[in-house]
Length: 109
Image (cartoon, rainbow, N blue to C red; front, side, top):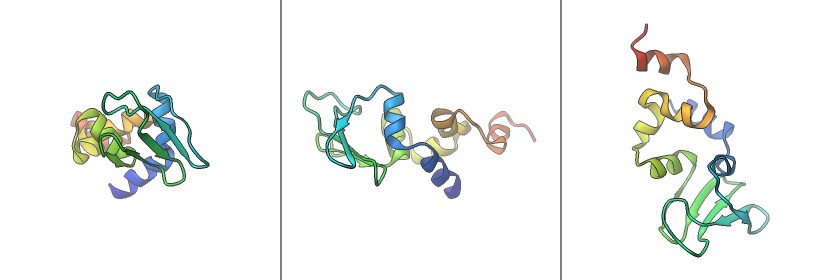
């Protein structure tokens, strides 16, 4: 599973995922973007995305991490639920479900 998670993170950069979900960040340096945190209500931008490291950090709520962690926090899921439950992570991020996950979910062999 670790290889699948790493492949998924390489395939879907955090900034691209956020933009697909209407996050309006603006450049805040060579490798950073800043905007309102999508994890809580705020009036001043405190949510930073580092595109070089492909991570986020919010100075308002103190949350940070990578793409998988963002999906966990925004959907209220555990890591295991995010990455394995019915191929949820694959559906959310790439619209592609590996056959073995689909078979596990639907009980096919």
